[in-house]
Image: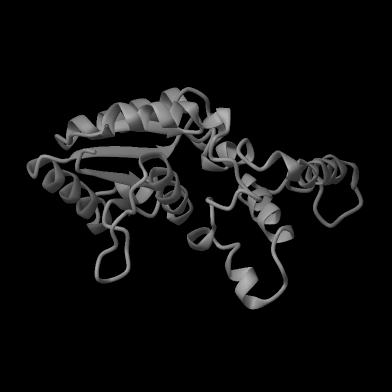
Length: 216
């Protein structure tokens, strides 16, 4: 397996890719002495990554250093949605321009599948253990109900974000103690838990192909 660094937007992406890369290649990833993953870097969002501030420069320098040492850089970000200033085509063009402007070397994949608008949460929704699908059936009824409630202080009511949907999915599958609640948080989720997730789901094929193409 090639020497690599994967750059992602946040803790949820980092945790998911941590478990998926380990499963795919059968190797444990390495932690630094400070307890951070050495090979998967959380960059605190695309806005921070592309900024001219310290966080953005740290990421760029990390990429340059890895390239100089013979490693390969992978950037795995959200495509996001046109309504949020993103969308697959627009976000890809923006990142490619950033890459050229700073003279960086990396291969790019955009969640959920490297061709549609969306984010990590759209992919996660497609890789749940199918036995738990009724949880999302309930959520769908909740979302459909909200627009019918026109007497609330806010009208129309805001439909919760996909992150809330995934959080709720995790919450109903865990207990009520503090230790169980901690397992719901982005950095603590166990994507290897087959009762919750299916890391062999067809929706993962584009990501699987991307990782094999660049890391084998």
